[in-house]
Length: 87
Image (tube, rainbow, N blue to C red; front, side):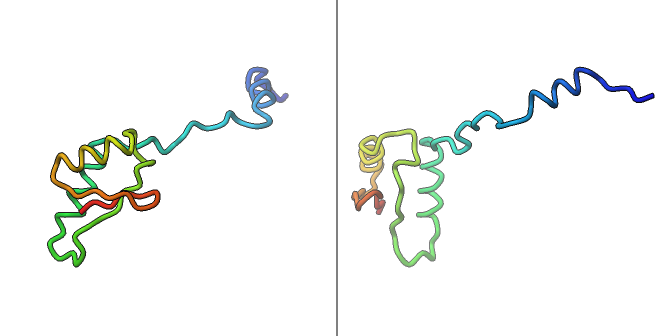
């Protein structure tokens, strides 16, 4: 005799169809992430060019905040299209 668990069958029936829309799996980055990126970019002694680009829309901070903090910490920050050039 076959035994069917009513709760298992009921669970399988209610799980048919679409699953809930996933949350954003790529949270915005923080000051710590930006600092780590810039330190890494400017720590490479053999780098020919002494600049890097940052896409401000990937960060929790506003573009204005990033520019102001960059300048405060000694970087030259220039807006080029949707990117910020750090030198």
